[in-house]
Amino acid sequence: MDNLEKYKNAFKEAFEIDDNVITDELAYESIPEWDSVGHMRLMAGLEDAFDIMLETEDILDFGTFGKGKEILLKYDVTI
Amino acid sequence: MKNKIFTSPVIRGVSVTVPKERLSIKNLNFDGVNLDEVTKITGVEEVRRAPKNMTVTDYAVNAAESLFLTLSFDKNEIDGIIFETPISDYLTPGNGYVIQERLNLKKNCVIVDINQACAGFVNGLFQASLLIQSGYCKNILLCAGDTAATVHQKDKSMQTLMGDAAAVAIISAGESESAFSFYNDGNLLKALYIPAGGRRSPIKHNVTDVEKADENGNIRTLASAHMDGLEVMAFAISAAPKAIKEVFGIMNWTKDDVEIFALHQASKPILTALTKRLRLSAEKVPITLTNFGNTAGASIPLTLCLENSNAFGKWSRAILCAFGNGMACAAAALDLTKTYFCEVHEF
Image (cartoon, rainbow over all chains, first blue to last red):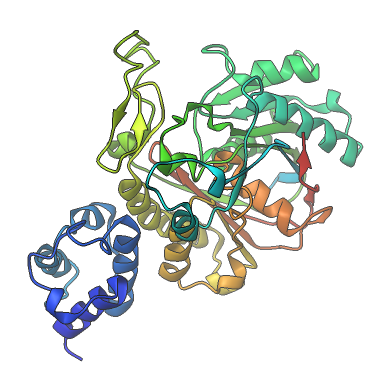
């Protein structure tokens, strides 16, 4: 499984959504599933998938699917 | 003391008192809010709520008296008092003086007041340990807790989460190894705070008592508690693993050595995320918020008393980790086999 697939899977599992909902613009609170609790599930899923530990400011900055890719670069994860 | 490891302080006993008044979260009334769904998310089904004329000191007095009795402890041996709570009975002095007067403790004791909420019990243990290790004190009475009186009645995010309780512990000079670590971030102080009522923004009619809804429909005034749930969660899941790993380093422990991770009962999503993040076995992370909610500084001692009622602790290697307003996070590595945990009292 490549990194993009792992990344998308983390979103699908955290929010129980289909592939077609996932775009770079998918944003925090743009769908009911991506609320604060869903956000924590997503962060835990990403940490599991990429074996990283996100910093507080990155958890708070992680506002869109696209932004998340930039943040993961800081952890040497290229999507 | 060597390499940040305390060698003297021993927690002799812990006692917790909760209000007898029970409040089922499902019986709260918030227009258009599915409280079954809220309960499912937070994990909190019921909380204890103090009547308006009761404060945390009333419950702390009850808990302390029962602890003295249970341990057959002479209260005149207390030479230090530490009281941890975010809102004292009076603007000043702090509750340490209130509890000294209420329990008639001796006059030549050290009194320390700590203005903190959820992380306060662990911070209080650290302050007690310093006083014991230095040789200045022999027996410290530590009190911690809060009542949710500063939460606005129409604030659904906090009304459905917060419960009332007071915990007390006696920490004495003896022989035991323990260590502490901290991770604090004042940049996030507004994630959980009360904006008005202090020097920066005094109470002012038609200003600090004006109700305002946040983007999630929680109604607050400037004089009531404000919480940004996402910031609190982000801090908790990021800070707690750092603090726990640091204390492991000091004690040279690994997570497999630890018999219990008593984490602050903030909410079920935070406990679940931390268990997953630290890759812990769920059996080692008790969840006790279902029937008591988030009881701030009392939540860790409450958890320990519920898990080990009326007995000496069964944990020779315990990790305590609490996080809350500040934002503050404190972790402790302790041997709790010499600690007697009382049954939780109602008052």
